[in-house]
Length: 502
Image 1: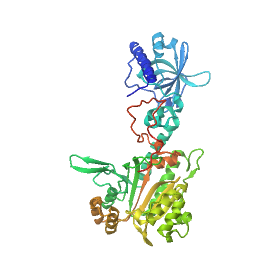
Image 2: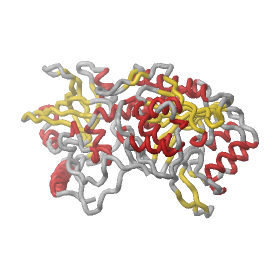
Image 3: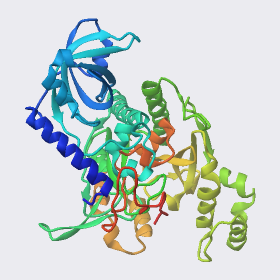
Image 4: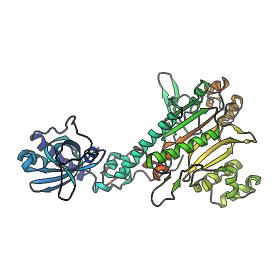
């Protein structure tokens, strides 16, 4: 680890304080410390004169000659402590002078209220639990450097209370999703993350080699094909909440490793899934935030109150590109799209041009929850065709704040049609066909509805965050250059705010 001269100076000073504390009989890295409760619990149960034991990180110190006020912070709250020479004695008080901001200490004493009315703890004894060899970031109460925030998330969590609230909310949302689904009879299951064929979606996989089996394996891009095999096996309602991996680009709404919730219900269809996701998402908002209207100040509020808008894909395209769009020649469509400043290569088909128009000009305008339905069959090979138009499939894409949040299908359970469509997608490459999945379908899969929810994007919607990196504790980052040092206040600009999708 390369350090700046400034960092080395601070660390040497703290190492000297560590030696001072050791000489005074303090172990620099203590063991378990039994607490009366968290700082929030001590504040909640405050009683004048009550004896308590508390612990936390020292985040503020104000020395006043023979007494010192300090603030401790744990995962729940901050609380003021009062250290007095007359109470501690000369040696313990002198040793406390070597406590630095960022150190963890344990204290024992009595609760009291200061003349300004602040609940506090008068310390009768203290011990060092962990010595911090680096200072908190300058102006630690408002760390702003985005690269340091993402790369050193622990500093971000210390410095920015709002960041902690986002991740606390994320945890509560995940807990609600599980409770909601289990209350409706869905069974949580686990399927392989390491797969012989990357199936269930169209994406570039991460590839590795399984030495023991002597074969190529892939990190999953989706668990769909395994979950459908469980429907074949007799499970009626299943879900999986876990990680997927796609070897593609980084931007404000994409990370190569992401969390997804996939849900399948036998004897259901796309309408079953539509009703389910409305109840699931609006219920999460109400449970965690106490409201169905979410977003940050300065944003258009998102109203999650059901029912949500339903808009067929072709209707949205016609509204934007003209009523005669689907009767237009490919050349005319290409010229229209280029006039809208879209990049349209000559080889693009009419369907591809249409989808480019949808993704670049239409999707981003859908701010309030919108089910985009009846998509072209070539885009969704695992969904059942619409009965009134076999060129379309019975699906929805739920779009909120201009981003796809959740696709849902009436699942294709016809093994003959499924094989034909996967063969068309594979363009003659038989190695891309998941024969185990196709064999399972031939055993008979009941009619079903299914959907996948991008959890990171759901958290973005509910918290109002604009970047996926702000809802992931440890987003993917480019490695630091070995030739450059970084300090909490000065970081190399070795990763742009966004990278284009692959």
